[in-house]
Every structure is written in C-alpha cells, then in structure tokens.
Image 1 (cartoon, one colour):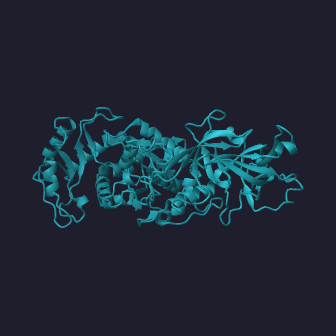
Image 2 (cartoon, one colour):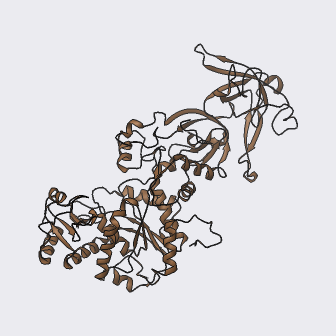
Image 3 (cartoon, one colour):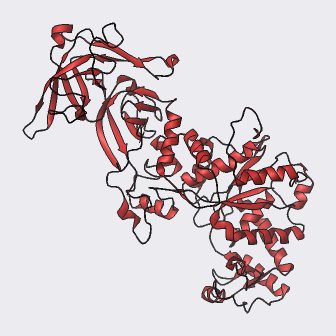
Length: 595
C-alpha cells in the first residue's frame, strides 16, 4: 500500500481526517492491537497476530437502493485513506433492516466499488462483511447490558415513549418500566427474542440519562421486534438491532480504527462512545475502541440524492431507470460516460470538511473534462444535419470521385494514429453553419464567403435552398481547387471560418442523446417546493445525427470528443457497433448550462 510520504505518490491536500490519522500513527494509538484474521470479539482478537493494517476504515452502505455520487465520495475517501496510510478498508453491508434490503442492491454496490477502482481484498483475505453475520454477538451484547444494569425492556406504547422523551427545552420522564429488576428484564428480552411478543409491543432501551441535553442519550432504543424474514438470516430472528446500536459493534468486531461518517451522525457519537466503553468494560470488544469522525456530506447542485426522491423519479417514470444518465446514481453517471478517475479527481478537489456547503455541478463536469481530454479519441459528428452540395465537384474531380482525408485520432498523441474519411460531392454540415444574412462575427457559410472544411478543402458558399415553410433544405458551394489540408496549397487561400462535416458517402447514421441537467434550479425541492415541478423539460433531446466512419466501429462505453460539440460515449446498454450506433452526450467542451 502507498503511504503519503512515498515519493511516487502524488501529494494530496491535507484535511482534518488526515491529521487525525497521522496523529494516531505518530502516537501509536492502535499499534498494539491484534487481529484474529476475521471479525470477532475481544478474545478472538487477543489470540491473533499483530494487526497487519496500520489503520482500518470501512464503507458501510445499507443495501436498500443504488449508490449515488455522495456515496462515490465516501468510497473514494474511505478506501483512499486506507491505501494512503498502509491500511485496509472493509466493505460492510449494514443489513439490519430486513424489510428494505435486496440482493440486487448488494451486487450493485459491489460492482460500484470495483468500478471506482477499489478492492476490499488485502493480504489474501476478503474483507467483505455483513452486519447480519454479527446478530448473535449483538444479542449477546444486549444481554450483557441488561445484566450490567445498562439496559431494560420498555413496554410503553410508541406514543407514550415519544411524549415521555421530552424535547430540547424539557427533560424526559423515566419510563415506569425503567426500574425493573435485572432478572425481569432478561425474562422479557428473551420473550421478545423467542417471538412471544407482538411487533411494537416492547423495545430494549439503553439506560443512560433521561435528562441529557442530547436527546439521543435519553435511553435510546437498541432493539425492536419485527417479525420479518431477513435475506441472510431467514426467520432466525424476530428482533433486530437499531442502526445506532449495531454500527459501533460492527466497527469494534472488525477492528476499525477510524469510523468516518457524515455529519448527521455527529449527535450519535456520544452513544457510540458510551456503548463501546460499556462493552469494553465487560471484556466483550477489543480495545482501544474505534473512534467516529464526521464530515460534511456532499451537497451537489441540480441533483437530488435522497433515496426516496430518486426512487420516486424511477417509479413514476420521470426517468428511464436507476441507470438513466441524468441521475446522480453511480450506474447513471457510468452510463452517462463518467469515468472512475473523474470521480476520484472530483472527490480529491472538493476535499472533506466539517462545514456544510454546496458544490456546483460544473465542478464535477470540470473534473470529467480534465480526465477525458488526454484520453478521448477525436471524431467529427453532425448533430443537426443539412446537406451541402459541392456543385463543381464532378467538373473538377470526376463523377463519383471520393477524396480520402485523414485526421489524428488524438491531436497530442501521434502514436495513436489517424482516422480516415471521404470528401465527396455531398457533405453533411450543421444547420447552424449557414446564414442567408450573417450576423456580426459570423465567419461560416453565407453567400460569397469561403470557409475551410476541416481536414478537407476550402469551399465558397454560393447559396441555399429552402422549402415552402422557409426551412433550410440544402446549401450549395463551390470547391476551391488545390486547397486540401496537408498539401502545399492548403494555406494559399486565407479563411476565417473552419467547420466540421461528415461525408454523405461514408457517414454513419446514429442516434445521439443530448442530455442536460435533470433539474432547472440549483437546489430542487428547496423550501416547500415540489421537486418534481422543477424538472428541466429539456433535459433530454434525441436527434438523428451523422458521424464519421470511425464512430461506426466504436465499442460500447468508449468515449470520444466530438469536435466542436463536447464529449460523448457509446451507450453501454443500447449501442451496437456496426448495427445501431447510440451516443450519449457526457458534457460540453465548456459549461453552458443556463447561459
């Protein structure tokens, strides 16, 4: 694993998390801990070897939906820190809620982590875990807390519990069941476990302080009854741990050192520490315990990342599915044409902090352009085609003649070779490249003006044809002889305009999907607004285009820069090379949204 001092590793900007990790490494905070080779309790680890990982982080998604760009930041952060500091990052499925989790999401999450360039394998060991494998220990921990006088079974109604909890200005009221004996609490807890009590009739609560100013410390619920089958444990359990109880236990069993969460968990940190201190006192978990650190979640303009809202967009068919290229889901970004490297670069640039802020979507697009520019092959495409006829072509070149032209695959990498295409009597050009009466600064096609057809010849526009409605149907031009690009006469005629084109003879018809941002406002649904009413009606436009021959051979997921237009990708689902070319616009050459 690379370390931050490795001369071959690029310097990364420091942040408070790096400072915490470097301090712990300098002080040897976790240097004496042992690792039992797999997650386990204190005894398991005490019989192990010194932990080969200098730090352990984890990425702990709940498998109840598809991951989005915010999760991508967390993946890059947790796996990246482990890589940089000689550590290991675990992938853990927090599957403590049996009613919302599906195997489809489990596989999607694993695929997303791998696609982003990370692995949970280290030292010939897979560090892929699921919280439900720890249910036995969690229940053991629950009984220990009851036996130590730190937990009790509460049989108030949910409404009574809510009323007695108090609020920020009023302390809570002790439950009438709080003073039960240890024996009575154990009996009722085992009745919960054995299915003798109905859903909602009882919960297990930690006994802390009903007057605490932190409401999360007012005897939080740690187990609830839920008669539901779990995708991993089946019907073995009818009681399930709350996330705030399960999360610190999972970290402790896995020997996590730095448990990195988003800021909404900051108020839960006192309970995280309280629970691990109690379990450490009982010798149940390894010490020193993990520590939780919080950073601001990603707030990205022009998208929604709420799983509920994303699911609504999919279910109500405002988008084509979870992988719709307009969604901020990782599968959507991937289909749009985003690269793992671009998302890693984006995560590095925005950094981590404790302060909430909004990141403009253009920052993500800039990272993508910076990654694609040196990689993407160039190509010509005409997205709004109209035919241009070179009226003196046959007179000068002969009937049916096609003149071979070429251009570099990449302008800054000659080793990638050249791409070939044909110049003939008929060419496809952009409709906007012609004007009858040109506005100021327009140097493209208008009667009497000369332009260079990029990589081809100079032509002089002679006029155009329109239909009865006034729509442009054809542009006419004359070839200026001996001006083909790359020949001695190419510079003999000076022109200000230089336009792209595709030959009618060898151009390939393609479906091109011009994607824009899904929402027309920076913060959809802000205030009391309905986010659905703020969907951008022009977020997708599908056009029939003509592209140069090299694009007809493009492989699915291959990225290109369409000269003048921006970056495009061969759609990974619908594109079929040589049969059905389909390209998605990834992003323009510069940010033009809303301008």
